[in-house]
Amino acid sequence: MKDNQVFCVLGATGRIGIELTASLLSKNLTVRAVVRDKTKLLNMLKERGISADQPTLSIFVTDLFSAAPNTALNDALSNCSMVFNCASPKISWVPLSKVNRQWGTPVLSLTRSLIEHANQADIKPHVFTFIGPEYFGQYDAHIRPHHRILSKLLKAIYPALKDNYLETNLILDGEYKKWTVLRCGGIRPGVKGRLGDSQNVDMDYKVDGSNYKLGKGYSLQAEDLAAYLTSLIQNKTVGDLEAQMPFTFNTHFSV
Image (cartoon, rainbow, N blue to C red; front, top):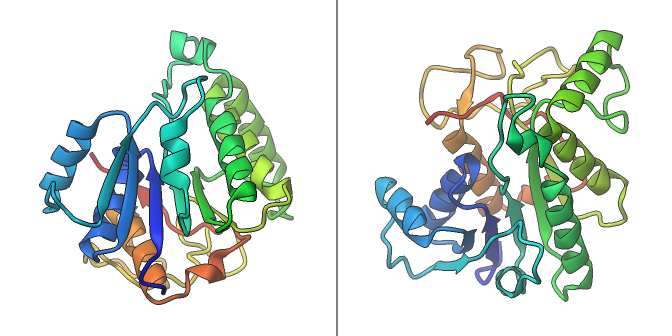
């Protein structure tokens, strides 16, 4: 790994974003955290033992989903080696709620801007995005009919899920190849070659007695996901995930 690498985390106060930011900083890696609330980020980092004056941390305050030109985002992305897009607006699981009625496609729009910036950058960043246990014809050749029906129904009810689905298809079908989509959610490790395969992950960072090669244990925590990605960066093997969308973890998002 190059010592001068810069890692940008969009939505650094989110459930994945904060754990990833803290994990990278704990290894003295250079992080640009993009948030709406600087004080909230510093408080969350303090809870995880990270000092507010961490010399490898730069904080950029902006609304990632604003329609206005975003100079702070452009500054944060400049010369980054990797970009972790953990940002999402507030999601409502009430089907007819105001949030759902006014949703639009904010995540798709942000990722489109992110890819456009990456295409124009001198240093082409490795872009990471995160999605739930969704199915994609480009990668999942054997999808059972009832899975397809359930997937379509859920996306019809919850526009945020459809937004994430459109975002991922934009990445999968686009010309930009330095990407990884990590599928996280209610997926148990399964038989090799089937949906839910644990991808040979045998590390248990929370030490809760799980062994994912054996399919033992219910879930990894969000901090496990962050620690795993950090370990790949340190071991210089994160490039193996380029142009892939594995079911990396059955991730449990604890509060």
